[in-house]
Image (cartoon, rainbow, N blue to C red):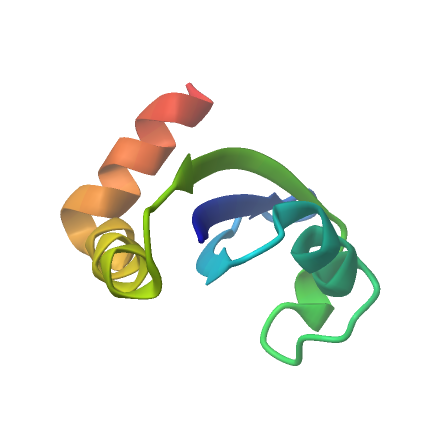
Length: 78
């Protein structure tokens, strides 16, 4: 499993998610198959992290969605 972060190229919005295949998931975001990200297309992948299982991936996803996690992701973009 992977945890990933993508950035909207129109308003710099950051979306964090988890998936088994980052490339396919990015294609889904950019093709409008995800309702929550459809309006902010196109997306660019800027962070991915491998996790050993779904439980650890979900935990890391929650961390990255927190205030501290968002600041960590923003620091990568600088």
